Length: 94
Image 1 (cartoon, rainbow, N blue to C red):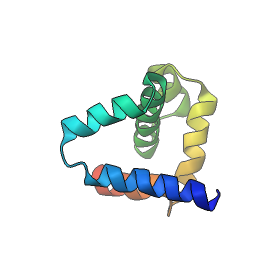
Image 2: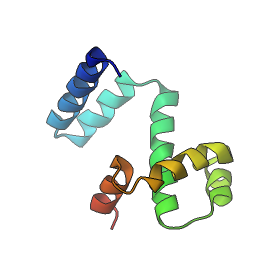
Image 3: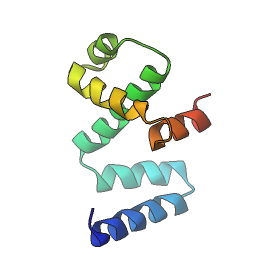
Image 4: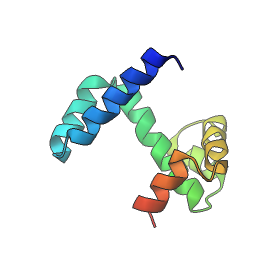
């Protein structure tokens, strides 16, 4: 990641953190992301939540209408116990 990319990402995250109205945040995300991007991000959260609960990858893929490879990618991310997915899931989905 270039320094410029990092700056852009940080600015985006900083902006998101300042939006304290859930309806406004939802509306903003609908505007800034394509419908497919918003759907993909939402599904990624569902994948890692279900993996954290111990659900089988094939069942998750079938239920969400996605490929097993997509679930496997989420599974690899979950292996990083100090990574963002695990930290956030531990905070919000105990």
